[in-house]
Amino acid sequence: MSPAPPLIEASSVTQIFAASDGEPSWALKNASLAVAPGEFVCIIGPSGCGKSTLLHMIAGFLTPTEGSLRFRGRPIEAPGPERGVVFQEYALFAWMTVRQNVEFGLKMRGIGKAERRDKARRFLDVVGLAKMADRYPHELSGGMRQRVAVARALVNEPEVLLMDEPFAAVDAITRATLQDELLRLWQEFRISVVFITHNIDEAIFLGERIVVMSAHPGTIRSEVRIDLPYPRDRGSAEFARLYARIGAELYGKGKETR
Amino acid sequence: MSSATPETAMAGGDAHARELETRFRLALKAQKRRAVMMRVGLNIAGIVLAIVLWEVTRFLPGVNEVLFPPPSIVIAEAIPMIASGEIPNNILVSLKRAGGGFVIAALLAVVVGVLTARLPVFNFLTEPLLHGSRSLPAIALVPLSVLWFGIGEAAKIALVCWGAFFPIWVNTFIGVRDVHPIYLRSAACLGAGRVQTLLWVVLPAALPMILAGLRQSIAISLIVLVAAELSGATAGVAYMMSMGHQLFRVDVMFIGLFLLAALGFLADRLFVALTRKLFPWYASSH
Image 1 (spheres, chains in turn green, purple):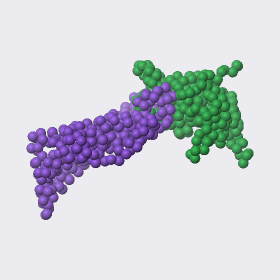
Image 2 (cartoon, helix red, strand yellow):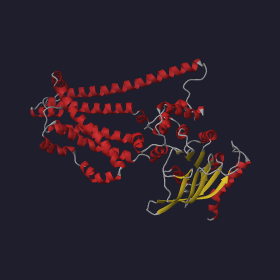
Image 3 (cartoon, chains in turn purple, red):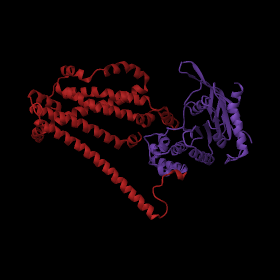
Image 4 (cartoon, helix red, strand yellow):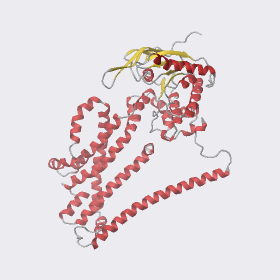
């Protein structure tokens, strides 16, 4: 198998923020990451490791202090519909119905009403919320809102879905359902997914590759390839072994130095 | 996935379940209607009670009917004034001034609010001027306005506009400035440009604050209106009260007070009703 040229390529990116006292604070130091087309990559790490910073740079919300980011070989300079983003929560427009939220991207790109309606219906169907088209976000449960957020990103036909702890705010049962659905959508649409999480179980269940990060300063510590076939069995010995290994990557080295 | 969608009717031909749902819906409707009736009924009862208490004052010792006329006298006086068109005309004149000033202020203040919140250069340039002017009570400008512009309509509309401008501007500024960045980022990664983001995302997100400013300014419009009419006018509700004062007709002054209270109350209710109608997501999402 020849390696496919990367869809996303971050080369030695560094992000320095101003801390509250005005001193420079290293959110991310020298991070390099490549994501292949169609690949599912999970990024895991404790808070403060810069995983969200990295995702926001790929999305085009932040410009790195140093280093370069490329999408299909072209520098990333601004957000764009080819990179769909799903946030943790509160990202749906509260003043729009579910349908209007899903149609938003199409509308902004000047796509006609009939086609918008048609596509929005199709993608709401895909996430199982066709019946909720005329509801407002505040009338939906947390899980339904995230399904709408996924539909709103997918309807633009992005090449990658950037997900920033998208299931962190929903209950455990809903979370497991959403994970199953996400895998189904990923397999159906054959797009790349970059998925941020602080949950080891979630990372192993979803990712083909797990990028482990550590904090202060935010750096990429290691990468673990997960070769288990989908759907993955949380009860299997291999799953448990990987869980222990990632856990050790996350916490182990930190403890040794203390 | 479908497990997450609500069940509105039981599957299959369960006649009993459907009947139960129908009964439930009817009961819910009746309950809501009762709640509304009760509220309106108590509102009216409160007004009636106040009128009765007020009427009883004429039987108290030491109460002068000329200085504190009971409702029966006030109403008896008001009826011919309504029939002759005097009161409706005064209301109309006052409404035009207050409404005109308010609408102009609203348009200006929302535009200036958006500009100051989104363009730092414009904000820093106008900051001292706007905040300085804001501390001037509109009423303090009334004498100057009469001196400069006389007692014409434009001067009164301008005064109302001045008073109503600032709360709308300040609220719009805060609302637009504090739009959650996640909304802006969502819009950007869904392909929205600057103007599109402003129109479809920033303004609706700031709407709760803008509405709060508008509501505050409705009350201020009436206050400034009264100040402007008291110091020089030939018609209007406050002018009518001023005439009542000069002719020692306390009953006419009471009519004016009642009209102002009713106008303020109705304008506020109308505003709330309009908000509910136009922005169904707003009232219920808070």
